[in-house]
Image 1 (cartoon, helix red, strand yellow):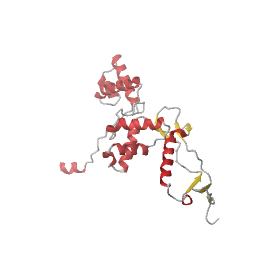
Image 2 (cartoon, one colour):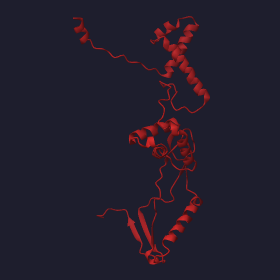
Image 3 (cartoon, helix red, strand yellow):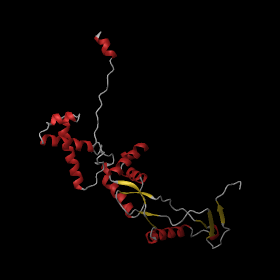
Image 4 (cartoon, helix red, strand yellow):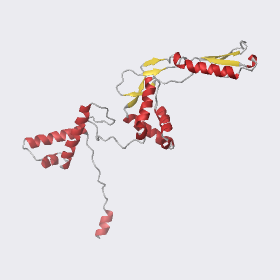
Length: 255
């Protein structure tokens, strides 16, 4: 009979209630005042607040740790404001072994004004770590998202736009010209043609990039060309003959 009754009694799962830092600070202050004024003991005060008595010592130690973190004035990857319910940084990142190299890569790109996204970080991490490269795309995205958040980066809109200095690519351009002269040295100049389009979107730059939280000025690099509705394809041969230009308009085929 007892076994039949027990089998029909629903078992209510025991759940743990979480408390915010604001409530924990209030509870510790309330208990301290009650004990100091000899109004109640720690156990009685905890019973009044409907919390286990051992929470008092645990919360007091945790709040001291929070205050020490705030005084240090260092970057903290997790929240410690009044609404937070925990102050744990989470499990170690899978990119911890290449943390310094990855951080240096992000810093060097940002020093040049080059936009950095989570995809950029993911590509650099894949080159640095063969083990990370073998992970699925979903796992890579999740790891990179946690990494950039822990490092204090967030996506920001660029506030200062600058173009790349032409002197930075002068050596590459001269090397390319020398290589092409060697390749076409024995060819008929009329068979050598060069076609260019204007404007050409050499690169697609976004206005968002990773930057440290709190940074007031966000430097980003823009392209030298702007988007237009028509494209002009100009072609010239190696002998100097200008071919008929080709003008392209963005429109529907049926007019």
